[in-house]
Amino acid sequence: MTNPYSTLTNPANGIALLRIAQGSLLSAHGLLKLLIFTPAGAAAFFESLGLPAFVGYLVIAAELLGGLALIFGYKTRLVALALVPLMIGATFPHIANGWLFSNSGGGWEFPAFWTLTLIVQAILGSGAFSVDNTQLANQTATPATI
Image 1 (cartoon, rainbow, N blue to C red):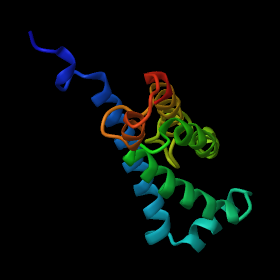
Image 2: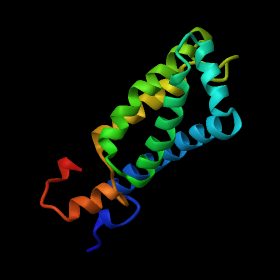
Image 3: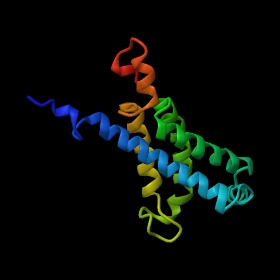
């Protein structure tokens, strides 16, 4: 009899796919701010929202470092939860634009959805192919600590 969890139907693989997709998108957004908008441009944008300029630099760091941590599955639960306030903060500037992200200026649906996926990731843990699971294999722990 074949183990049904040894193939693509293994929930750990789906969890890993979610984690890697989130990390890739966050890293891409961080790189966009770093290489295209420039850190000074990102800082000026955050100032235009009424926030201190240094928030732009913090967001770049959070997106790049958090994205890489998610891609590799390092401290996944902690990183996903730490990124939730970032996504909530990204939601607020879009509220006045309406729900659909295709609206002028972008609506709030995409950052709100992203917030929820980070919460789900924190609940699910790292999934397969992660540093967390490699570290866990070297310890005696329960799956709930992944």
